Length: 504
Image: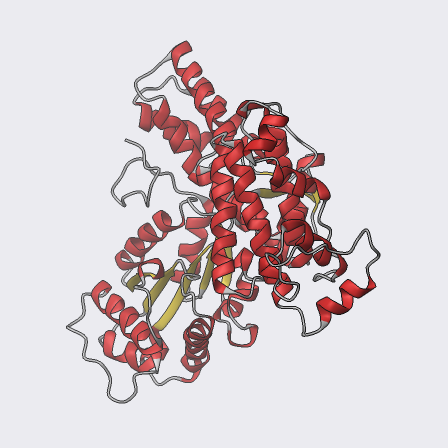
């Protein structure tokens, strides 16, 4: 049995301890606070569950709180109570009695949740970035940071004197919490590490139930390195097979993921293409096979945390051959790479944060929905639908951009345009004072004359032509079968990305 979803059960034989687990345990045993960072699906939770058990065996009390399970819509008091109840349950404490008063002090809730006196308490906060509300998040972690300072002067028997924290997740510690109130500044940082080849061989023997696994282990390691989720996934695909059949199935599965992606691939690459700084780093690495590391730049550190790149001497290189192959074929990372018709050009959906530059909430939702719909269509090789959806996303961006211009800015700009550049409105269908009524051609003309976040908004004319190309009459006049429209769909996605960059 393999474990590709969720943590590996603590009693499972299909688990290989890694260096980061041993380091984290040693720090916690010394009463040090810990920040554990690493990619999603990289074994952090599995390791922390085992660390919890080992700490208990060593005589410490240990509570495990997964913030990803936090119910939505919690205010600050509700958050503190929820966390306190999770801690009390983990410690098998008596039923929690809420503290008197406003209930906005985490230390008071800890006093209610943790029986005293007692041995030191390690509180593991998994998925520490899961609190969405910025103000609540800063207050929560700020109060935890205050506990660190209070612990140094606390009386024996006080909760602050015995409690310590470990935080885990995939996030930027520099920006998740206000730096002045961040508990991460007083933590020992530990980064997860990949499985070694020997680890993969050991795991293969356990999973496949035989000793002659060196060749298949090497093939897996050559393709996906020591990424635990991908190693488990590949082993799951060949269970019950041997020899040539085993190798053929493995090769087919690697090819399938390289062409069509997976939830795991979408998660990593979606994070990268949703951040222009990460995109730039990954684009250089995709073009040259490596990129010079900049240790002082938090973006270079974060692209290692999410797991796409790893450090090799003075450079960053791809974590494994599969990631490198996907990056080099990605038209979002390398727009010049338009692939042959019929071969999937995998695009990646973007999160809501990537569209935060759109002021109007409804246009923002329309834009995100249309863009991610285009991504789904292009990955399913439905290129006409992708062209339609990219066009909708473009128009939603442009309308919002035009509507939020200062009063009088648009008429002033239009007056400066020459005859060829000036919009040609068609009343009564188009109202010169209402950009939402304009045709796309007029939206583009005016938007080009305005300034975006970094200068002029570059909207390639080819994008409008592609948008018009989806009209049935236009399609018939210049007909191409669906399978031959991939270059247009891929190019449209790249061009929409250019407009997003300029406006945002």
